[in-house]
Length: 447
Image 1 (cartoon, helix red, strand yellow):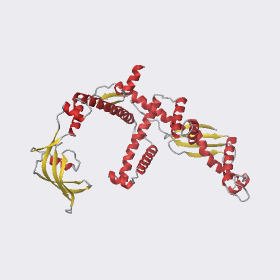
Image 2 (cartoon, rainbow, N blue to C red):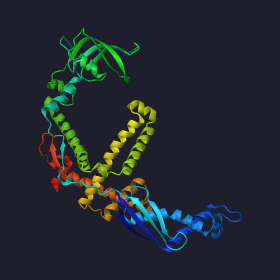
Image 3 (cartoon, helix red, strand yellow):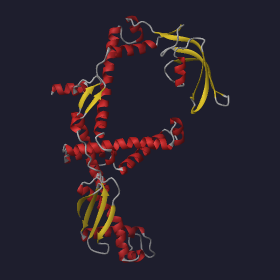
Image 4 (tube, rainbow, N blue to C red):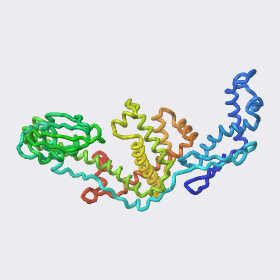
């Protein structure tokens, strides 16, 4: 078998395949054996039906050859895709150009492939990452969170503000006059917007004894307007214990505040490091994806990504024994909202995919046979099959090229992470070494 490719307009490729007569005769023989084992003909045992009888049953030698073409062409197409290293993104349109009646077989397969998109300026990208410096404010915030566990509430006579706690009676009636919200002695933290946003606006500046009236959305049904009445009974503030060595010894594993603050500094530093590392990957990919014009994104790829994401969501819901109706009720979405949201994410993911593939081409990032073999071995181990069997399966389905493309894309991502310019939120350049873990730094230093 021989295969050649020709680029056409519109991200299409014509794959021309030639199959010598002896090779196709072998495929025809395989079809004959399969039909002989499947077809039940009186007077013949399964697998022993003569070819002339099969031809007669199917309508002649031409019908048998047509069946062989129908069965064998997908396999020949898959082999041709592997041989030419194509990475199709849609099903092909196959046109048999010779050999329908006898002799060698040739066919053309017109297939859509990923476009080679432009990513101008990819080598001058920069991203802004969360800073790594742990400030005294960061430490004080964490200490205050610990102190709040031992906080006492103290009634004050002043007006309420954000962070204060107000004891209120909250009642609301719908348009018919029926009470749909009713709770007394509710301790509410002003500024949290945990009931309705209008409540926080009314409580700011309110004092004990004030009666408030306003309209807002029903927390249980946001499309329903409710008339609320609120009685402010008191205003309280949190009185935190003093941050002394004694308090630290009683409420932490450290005997002094200095040691507690040092531990908090270390933990916050590690959190900031992880946040920056994650932000680098996310923002770098977003930056290079933004270089791809929306018009260059094939809808067939977006559709495939949408279907994959919806299938993944359905599987996760089934694993949690949650139905779609229950999911929509819990999220407040409807099917159209979900589809629109998924499509936006899918479009962004396809742009990122195209951008990284374009980067691999621009930087001529190649993949060795050894690297492909290593990945095949890893995949085979996960699937609990031999590398050889996995390779045969991928070749038969024409997916070997897709694996190769994914590995090149991973190389492009690493190149991007190694070359994008880094800045902190203050606009100051960041060292890439500062984003490495201590273990990685130590390994490099020892080398």
